[in-house]
Image 1 (cartoon, rainbow, N blue to C red):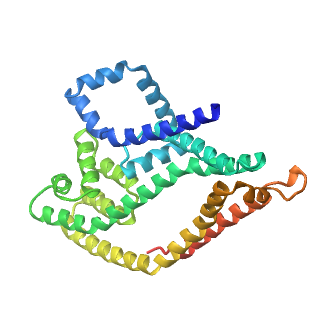
Image 2 (spheres, helix red, strand yellow):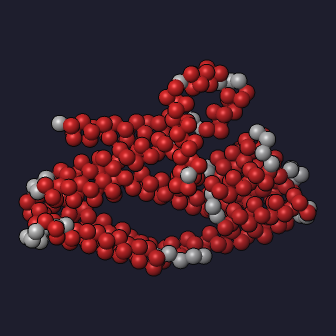
Image 3 (tube, rainbow, N blue to C red):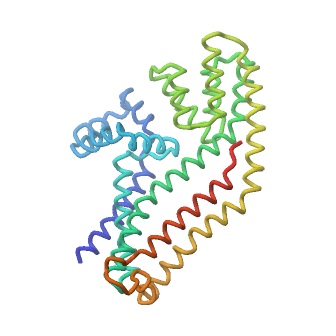
Length: 322
């Protein structure tokens, strides 16, 4: 009964985290409203809420750590309005759910239930991180795909007589997400008192990209020594568009290898969980050699290690840097 309650609590935590992701507004917009006094009611409510202040304090401590700073950067890259502490709570909840699924799949034998439960708990705790990483990579890829046209827009705006910051406002207004969202943040940060160099540095940390690094470096150098920034951006834009074209060709040629890696990795795990749930007694001997308990569970652990190594090797083969 206690296990069922813990399992249900974990599901509620995950659902609550998803709701927070969908309802939480932009952090920069919230700060702007509080500074300008247009959101006094929310500011007073948050200031008087002990739980909110406690979570904010814990979040600040976690963000200062190496792992927490990486999670915060990935959350910003993925544009998820979630605190680091909330994300860690979701990791714990998905780990508990994974333990419940594994224990149910290996219910025919106590040792099998423990082994599968621990393995699924570890895997479940990494599910939010994998989702965040994939979402962040996809958003960065979309940003890079739009960057060539964005640079051209900036160059044309500069030729029309606009300043660089005004050109960024034009991109934030007329471009498509995620480019418009990120350049809007740049404009907001400059409006809050940061320099253009610092705002562009924050953009580069959120969107780590070699192409964006070229743009940021060119703008910083031009602001220090002067020069024709529009002409420089034209050259960078041509380079970026050509690199994007080559990357798309490489992804097309390596698509079969990537899909094969996903299938070869996921199929044994999926089949094992399915057979364990349908016929648990059939899978129970896999977790024991029929020898003393000191030797149980060696085969699944070895199989899991080989599956992970095979996936890493296949991904290394199909990953080609351009």
